[in-house]
Amino acid sequence: MIEKNQIKAAVAAAAHKVRETNPMAGSITNTVTIDFVANAQLAVGGSAAMVYLPDEGEALVAAGNAVYLNMGTLFPIYEQTIPATAKAAHDAGKAWVLDPVGLGIGSLRTKLLEELKPYKPTIVRGNASEIIALASLWDLLGAEDALDRPRGVDTTDGVDAAREAAVALARYTGGAVVVSGEVDLVTDGTTVVRSHGGSELMSKITGCGCSQGGVLAVYATCADAFTAAVAGTSHYNLAGTRAAAVATAPASFKVTFIDELYRATGEEIAANPMSVEEA
Ligand SMILES: Nc1ncnc2c1ncn2[C@@H]1O[C@H](COP(=O)(O)OP(=O)(O)O)[C@@H](O)[C@H]1O
Ligand SMILES: Cc1ncsc1CCOP(=O)(O)O
Ligand SMILES: [Mg+2]
Image 1: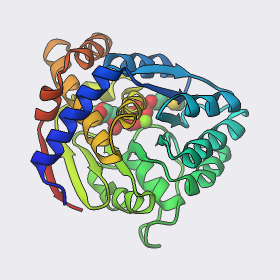
Image 2: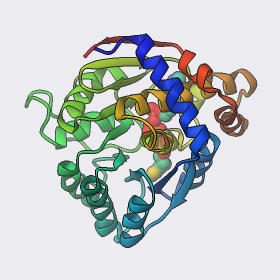
Image 3: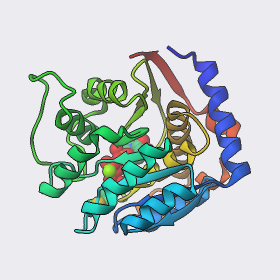
């Protein structure tokens, strides 16, 4: 298990490095939230590039240290783009972040996520239902825990219901897993961090999860999987807490939230409340 002080020091260092280096993390993401993802990546200090085509996904892998793959709205071309980009990242030893949005809707999403298993995402980020569904699809849960039911894009499970699935996924990938919710859970399969903060209003605007994934990819350009996952999640929760102190309804919250992502310093991000336990 990693000690809390060590985690916090690594988080502050990662935040400083992002701000100093303005790293690019390319994305293949959904059309609902593509603008929010790019703006969140810029606000935390990164640089964004959004593409749809297979050779462009591979080009973004070559051009940066991390890419973000989000399954939210699939087009037929993604049958080529998503596996080609994940394979390119895996083969190049570069980081990639997976958000298995809406796993269970339709057959292409399921087929693609099955295909991605050998490319072991550096960070998996999803809500509790998506994390349980992915661990189940990848046969990482005991038969009695395995679930196979279609879902939408919002969770029907609490974060703790996905703890075992998250630990199993992290042990399989060798990377980190973030389960988002009222209190976010982050694990590398050995240590579990619970990151506090944020706001209920984050579930009242679309794209807080998707943009969190984009921010995690920015951090993954500059830090190991677990540090990047804790740092991006802490940064998110701090900005959510601060935005909720100013804005009381969804649209103004979203604008203020992006401002607070921009304002947060490395020390403030590291000081965001967390608890640490063994996996
Ligand atoms: N009730 C809540 N309280 C605090 N933060 C929340 C709450 N609901 C969601 N969040 C935050 O919103 C972000 C997106 O989480 P979530 O809504 O679970 O993802 P998704 O949009 O993929 O379903 C995360 O940073 C999470 O911490
Ligand atoms: C509503 C919706 N439908 C397909 S993707 C998407 C966005 C989901 O965004 P998030 O999971 O971040 O709320
Ligand atoms: Mg989501």
